[in-house]
Figure 1 (spheres, rainbow, N blue to C red):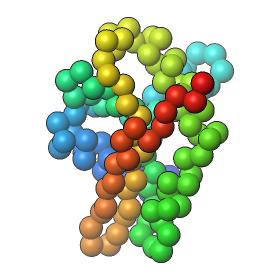
Figure 2 (tube, rainbow, N blue to C red):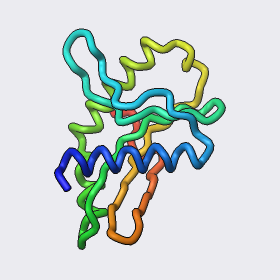
Figure 3 (cartoon, rainbow, N blue to C red):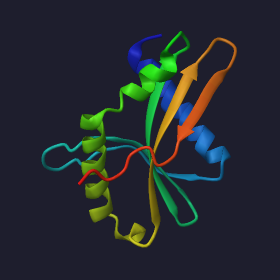
Figure 4 (cartoon, rainbow, N blue to C red):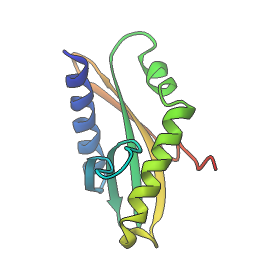
Length: 127
């Protein structure tokens, strides 16, 4: 499986997991199309008044895959996420009164089953 294919499959599995948990998907692979690119949101999900920005990290099952996925969301990635989330919210005023959350969703692909783990509130505002 190619690297892009793994990421796309992981994002699709993550979105399905959120939908099964009662969320609706607002947008996927969102980025600002005007001006300097701020980053990308893998997807944004909503359940009632909770809007969740989800960063998906997907790995093929092997020793250390889970830790590797978590470590890939470092300070630089967190800053990019926060920039694009601020831009998204500035342009989507309908979410102003919603509760906001940033999750990291780790998807581990295995031959027999896929493993999904959500780390809720994994990124906090650093500014």
